[in-house]
Image (tube, rainbow, N blue to C red; front, side, top):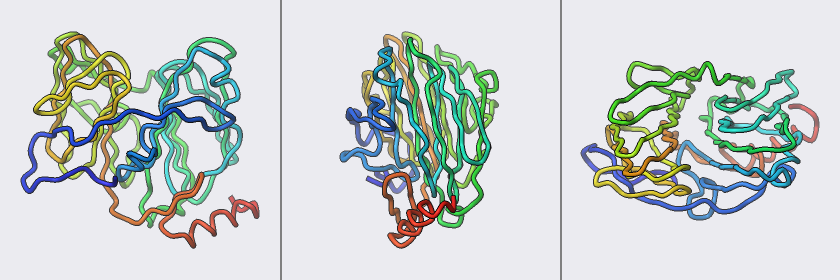
Length: 286
């Protein structure tokens, strides 16, 4: 599934598909839910993957994500709880704590690790993969390490509050330096009876994932319990509400409309480029 359904005249966004994540594991056996990147929702241009991880059992996360390569896209890690140490072969290092964000542009190639810095307690967060356009696939790698106190928030009124990781709302701009997909990444909290109308660029593809409580998404409102994703139609804004309270991420980006060739940690535009990525990694050219 590459794009949500579109109508001739942009309207307020509605839900066009809902689903749940599938249990999976990655890295050295870290347990997670694969939300985008599963058979029912293989992608949503420009988004290639969304994983949610959350456990207070160290056995589910302690092995972490040892050194592994990437090429051709961006990885976004948003921590809700716990601590994760990032290191890469470009010399970057950072500690991800609760509320912090790592936005890494792999570009032509990077090798990094993400390892827990705790042996007990809750580890919770998201990892999102954002595609790069063909012209930027081989750009120099870039690393944005954003501490929690650099992530601004805004009161939207009517029982709604938002943390702005990327994009802009209510005059508040997120700290992530935007790329070709002009990404939007909001973490919204709705109190019981809360309601918000969130404007989005009409050409952006967008989704909502509820991870606490419940929310009613779109017009007419469709109820989503925690653990469900809603793909949205085109339109200028999305209505969000909750009768009992909830928390969700709202993510949107400009679709690239380009061919996607992917295998393991590499995402290119052709099978030949994929083969070159594997050859370059084996030859130590990352």
